[in-house]
Length: 423
Image 1 (tube, helix red, strand yellow):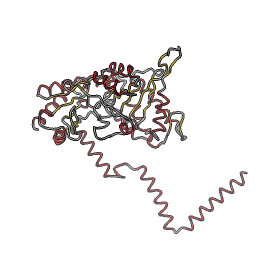
Image 2 (image 1 turned 90 degrees about the horizontal axis):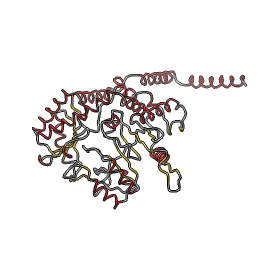
Image 3 (image 1 turned 180 degrees about the vertical axis):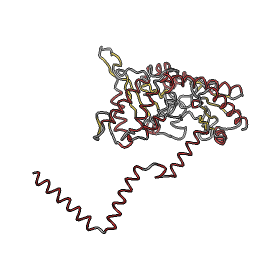
Image 4 (image 1 turned 135 degrees about the vertical axis):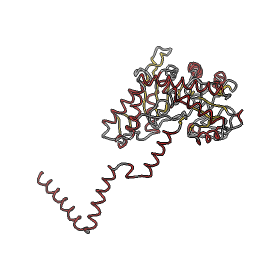
């Protein structure tokens, strides 16, 4: 057997040499040179391989550095997170879950994702016997409250296309969610699921009230804390986990992580029925199958690794102090705007953002966004109750969480208000 194997190897080697010798010398040289050049490209830095993209990245870096970033959907993540996102973890394909992959070679990928899951539960102080959580960068969810799912004439997102949805609204005179109307609408609509979440709401959610409505209608309560998950992790605002069945969040806003998302679900004992039998939560298997293979292929392992780092940072005392300063700064920011005569939806703020109603100023949020951008201030237009166009809305939203130093905040306020006075 060894002799025959060696003979086969020698024969294949001879055939390769014969094929090589049959090529013109120039072709052989070009092939070897191309192979060497390609290997060099794989190890060369970005600036050498693609100067155009390198320049664009530097321009964006300068824009973020020199301007004021006040968009609630954004944040500055850490160098450690960016290093993980730009690491070799991006090379591996790993359909499935830890310990149950469709491909081999996932030993260390499993370690990273399992660690991320563990840290996700720790970040929000959840009992692993009662909660499960997964970090899947492709997950996301729209809120129902501000009608981002659909308009009166058009269905926008996949949720509104495949499911029948009904938005709940604000009490326009107070600027807070109208929970009484929500309860009445739920009695008529009989939803299977109610979402407690929004993208531009300056108040705090009454999770207990929504839980009561869900119990009455036998509906699942899903809390989407995409914008406020960093504040929840720091314990500076109420947590939805006490009341919700399922909790979703993105990871790149107040949480300071990479662009991704997480989904949490209750598990274990739900109740004991009238027959004295244990009734268990059944969300885990359904959610797992819906995410993969239902909606997602290979997860972004580099993003999951970066998220694990962000979740570790969210457990530090410095992180809690930062989020406390965010709330303090935003409160002062809102008070300053009120003193200058601006109308704030909800009358102020209870979290990290301020929604400014511009209708009485005779201008819309789109124009304000452009004016502010011209002086290197990034904010974003936003709708308020009664708007008919999301592209030309009557308000804009600010979030001063990226600038949390007291001295810098005062400079920001002065610059922002000076810009507004010139409109």
